[in-house]
Image (tube, rainbow, N blue to C red; front, top):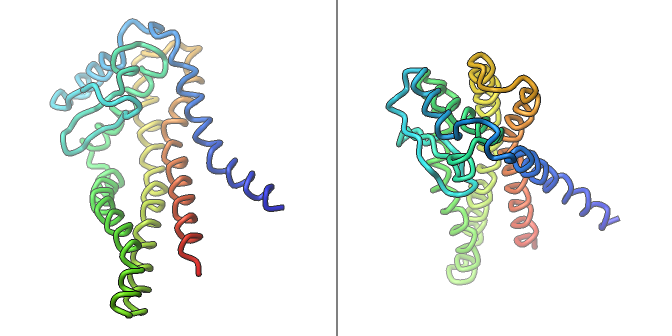
Length: 227
């Protein structure tokens, strides 16, 4: 029974990640399906939208994102340099975030502030959990130790909440911003539209996979700290 439960938990947590990676990888070839690269398309879209101030930069592998503070679309090398369907679609998705920022889309602004705050909070959370045994043994203050534990676990759980809150922002960037830009601008071949929709879904669901991993981490700490 335990083996079945563990298998189900593993499937729920890891299958979304596997599906996302599979979809993105599937449409990275051929690399020259479109004449321009993802970076070229991002610059063209930003120019058409009057967002020339937003930079397009080569980012780290696997790290496609829009940086609201730097006002920069950052694309991983495989999307920055090549013209695969995945590269074109992911570039449009990140431009969608730049459009959200320019429009003052509140969920994006809230997420940006929340992520900055919670990154610090989560680091403190790990420290507080680590300090709990010291407080209990050295100071002999059970109430303080429990308070540290509660605050530490709350900080870890907050990351899960952020990822789940991020999902509507990602769906908006994918389907209300990126897809209309690609279709109306006739950047996509007609036969690629359904595949692009699948890629945009995968781009949004990366945060669901991240929240599930955060849930696994939270469950691990609960198991470790359970008396």
